[in-house]
Length: 308
Ligand SMILES: NC(=O)c1ccc[n+]([C@@H]2O[C@H](COP(=O)([O-])OP(=O)(O)OC[C@H]3O[C@@H](n4cnc5c(N)ncnc54)[C@H](O)[C@@H]3O)[C@@H](O)[C@H]2O)c1
Image (cartoon, rainbow, N blue to C red; front, side):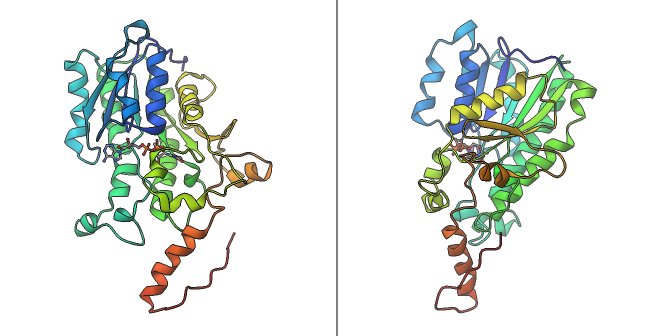
C-alpha cells in the first residue's frame, strides 16, 4: 500500500480526551489532519485543541461518547459527515481502562456480572472490534483509496500479568485481532495494525494509583506519550509496516513483534531497553493473591513464589 500522507485527511479517535491518544490527535492536527475526539469527556489539556487554529485548515471536534454503547459508536460516522469532516481515513479505537477495581478479575464487576460481562472487556476489546467493523464498511462504501485503523495493544498483550489478567487478556485479544486483519491491506488498501507500548505515565495510571507499585523506581523509565504517538504515525505512514503489524514501543526504541517465536519484551529488557517494566514490581500481584487467600479463610498473607 502506498504510504498515507495524513495532511488533508481526517481521523476519528476514541479516548483522545486524554493521554496517548490525545498526543496522537495533537500530532495529526499539527500535520493538517482533522480529528474527531470521541470520549466520555475532555481533560483540560485537550480543550484548547477545539478552538485552536491548525495547519492546512484542519479541524478538531469533540463528540461525548461512551464506547461501550454501540449506538454511540455508530453515530460517530453520520455526525462526522453532518459536521463537514466526511468519512474518516484513519480510525483509532484508543479508549482503554486498566482493569480498575470496579471491573476486575479479583473484585468483580457489579454491573457487568449481572449481565455476565466485564466492562474492562467491553471498553478494551469489544469496542475496538466493533469500531473496526464499522470503519471498514464506511471505508468501502466511500471507496477510500487507502485507509487505516490503528489499535492500542500493550506489552501486556505479550506477557501475562497476575494482578491484571483481564487487561492482559484484552490486549492479547487486540494483537490477535490485528494479526487476523492483515490481509485487508492487500485486498482493499485498509491497513489494520497496533502499537504495543510499555509504560507511559498517563491518567490511566493516575486513576489506578494502587498499581504504581508495578513500576520499579530506579530500574526503569516512563515512556513519553509523544513517543507512542510518533509510533502510531509510523503505522499510518510507513510503507514498510504493513497491516497486521504489532509495533512494540519502549523508551527510545521500537520493535516489530514477530508473528511466531517472538522473544518478548523481557529479552529487550535484558538488553537494557527501558520502559517495559510491567511485571517486575510484583507487590500488586501478591496483594491480589491475598484477595483469593481470604476466600479460603486465611488470616496471614499467603506466601508467594515467583514463577517466571
Ligand atoms: N499508559 C500506559 O502505560 C499504556 C501502555 C500500553 C497501552 N496503553 C493503552 O493505550 C490506550 C490509551 O491509554 P492512556 O494511557 O492514554 O490512558 P488515559 O486514561 O489517559 O486515556 C484513556 C481514555 O479512554 C477514555 N475512556 C475510558 N472509558 C471510556 C468509555 N467507556 N467511553 C469512551 N471513552 C472512554 C478515558 O476517558 C480516557 O480519556 C489504552 O487503550 C491503554 O490500554 C496504555
